[in-house]
Amino acid sequence: MRLVLLGPPAAGKGTQAERLGARYGIPRLSTGDILRAAIAAQTPVGLAAKDIMARGALVPDEVVVAIIADLIDAPDAAQGFILDGFPRTVAQAEALARLLEERGLRLDAVVELKVDEGILIRRIESRIAQMRARGETLRADDDPEVLKSRLAAYRAQTAPLVAYYRGKRQLRSVDGMQPSEQVAAAVARILSKTGKPTRAKRRAAKARTKARKRRGKSARQAGPRRPQRRKPGTRKAARRKGRRG
Ligand code: AMP
Image (cartoon, rainbow, N blue to C red; front, top):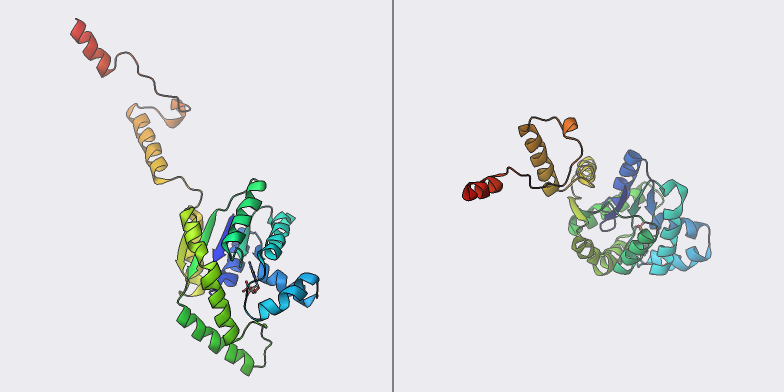
């Protein structure tokens, strides 16, 4: 299972990615987590990303694409992964498509968590206020003003991915304002359908089974499907014979 979770900051992508990861036994790959770890470890990438992240802007594409290339090549991602926070620009989505193609892999789905931004901002503001009141440590970008910048970056640079993936017929949308369990159930329903045969294929398979039953044969006796050939004795042949005789 290879999945992208799309949605604005604080839409619940992280929570859903963790749940789905546990369910399918595949890792959640978060560029945000890797960048925060790089900042904590004061690596060159971390030092370059620190100010950008603190003001709620996006880190350059080439930095996050290099991070993702390493993550999808890691052994724990061999059976699949859930991308949380990547891609965030069309250029990143194109780079991801190239990375997957080079490895003979493909995405199973892109799930968009649709949220009401106004409600989201009010929710985050009250969560931040409560955390501050309890004296808990906040992320550098857990600040109402920075959140507004992150939402602006989402609208300008990430939201175009909705049309991008819709155009590729990979996009599925879920109401992200529902309680977390219901969002998870809706995503699971979507994933249970990925890779299933299309309606046309299902209908053709049903018609074949029906035809076999009419001929009084079991599926096993009928053997593998053979290309259809017009046999002598069909209605057309009989008509022709009748005309001659
Ligand atoms: P997140 O934890 O996904 O909300 O990311 C936190 C911050 O890390 C973002 O606001 C960006 O500054 C940076 N970041 C994470 N992922 C990306 C990405 N794919 N492209 C650019 N910047 C990113």
